[in-house]
Image (cartoon, rainbow, N blue to C red):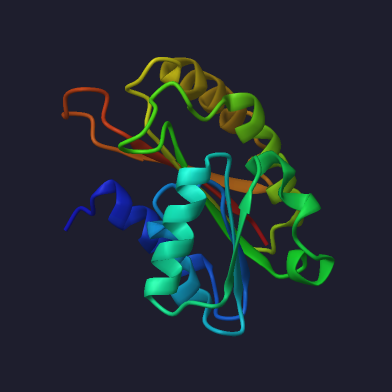
Length: 189
């Protein structure tokens, strides 16, 4: 069966991330990915979740508390500043990161992710990512500013060295209204 965008993004993370890994939820949103990641890394692993909106931080902490998850740290800051918040011993076990780009569902649609900070975050994450680790970007682009972010991200990932990275594009081409798609970057051996 063909998997939907969210299910496929989770499938990719499950395949690449191991128990005990450190992972990043670069855009906490309502905490769904943070919770998912906390389960796949297990108690020995750790999730660092980032968001710039207080509402997203509160939603994510609430979701983690409701599910008794204690292996996650939620930080109100840009994902581009991740390196300032993650201890070195955790960075050496960085197995993956996930981004849901766009805006926080149900909130102010003028607060959006921007390619400048997203690409900075990706570059930093790739420099710390373990072999076969993965960065998954779920690109929602059907909002004001979304087309620019999509174009700049596509330009960026096309230029990644094929000797160092596999880059995957996954999306549905027969859906209306600017359907989201996935860009996944896997670090080669």
